[in-house]
Amino acid sequence: MNENVNKIASTLTKLSGDEILAEDAIEFEGFKYRVGETSGSNIDYMYDLKDLVNYSHIFVRSLIKNRPIKKIAISIPTEAYYSSKLKEDGGIIEKMKESLKRNIPTLEKVRVLPQGTAAVSHLVMQNMINPKDGNILVIDGGFNTVNISVTNEAGKILYTNSIHDELGVYNLLTEYFREELKRKHDEVTTNAQMLKEIFLKEKIDLGFNTVNIIREKEQALATFLPKLIERVTRELKKKKIEFGQFVFVGGISYYIDKNIISSSKPFFIPEEGGEFLTLLGMKEMVDDDYDVFDVGFGDVKYSFKE
Image 1 (spheres, rainbow, N blue to C red):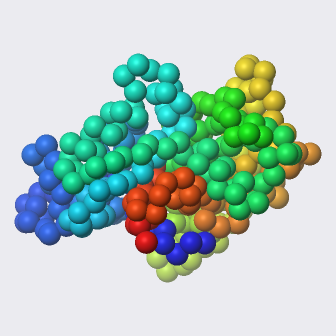
Image 2: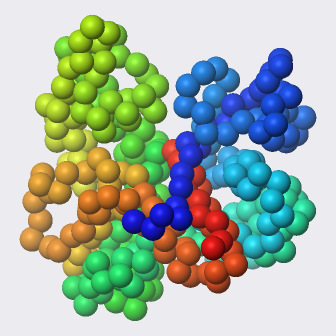
């Protein structure tokens, strides 16, 4: 994995009291914010495209730490990207550019790129998948959005759609996984970031005891994954779109066990760093003098120019 990639949680903490004097506070519309915190009070997540447009610049401003920045590339969901291409006013692509330039005066150029297809571009360039195996179904799962797209051998988008608030990592953790934990443990946190830590570590701290929760994790996946696959398959059948292979990218790739997927088609699930694949693809699509930000609803991934 490229060492020049990092991430922070896509959280905004509205500051009050003495905290508003903090050096890392970012001012916007009369309030001051700190980004990336996962515990404490007054923490908000970005939930939709409107939030991405309104608040992405806060993360950029916080991460660059007052360093003059002239060129950035930033991501938006694939479906939103291609929908914007069809709109006379440029849709969310232009709104994102306007918001960033308005709030970061030093910016000269902004490139907006699609998330899932940027990841596939990287996988193809690195010979991790072979376009000749047929149309590629990309399941780009994030915190509360799953972007579905199908590209052909030449990289042309044949289909794209986004599923919101149903089958993302947030739903896996707070609905399916939490429900399994509650069967044995009376009190279970509702904090998605803490559930994420428990899920990935495969154990829960109960004070005097630490308990392995591998079985609960497996049961949650065994219920969640078929629902995700069925929903994706149903969408594609409606549109009569076929695919010869599929890939899981984004944060959800950390949660998908390839051993429970039964398919005669070739598929790829990264063993590590799946959430950074879009970022790496974006870096390959722009010049070396760009700072790159893959803005998701769960985490912001970023890479500064060399």
